[in-house]
Image (cartoon, rainbow, N blue to C red; front, side, top):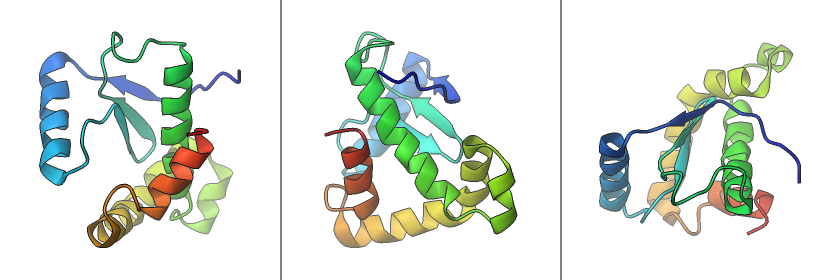
Length: 122
């Protein structure tokens, strides 16, 4: 199994509740992580998704695909930088595009989510 080394931010329980409430309000259901630019925000506790487990590997592969998608919106010169920087530079265009598509298709039929699930082997 390939080791995935990405910038991951783990949330304390109070912030996990806030993110999960926001996801429920948006109709996304329970979420384990989300990508904001070049950082993966891990919302699930280590008890829910054990570090180093196959579940965490799938979760990170899914979120890494979102980083690749965000990097695709970065300017051409950003290709000189690592994926996390390219994803951050592309985020101001990626996030509105993601939300616009999500409003029209919903979460399950969102093409970016379908690609991320495929990348994770789901």
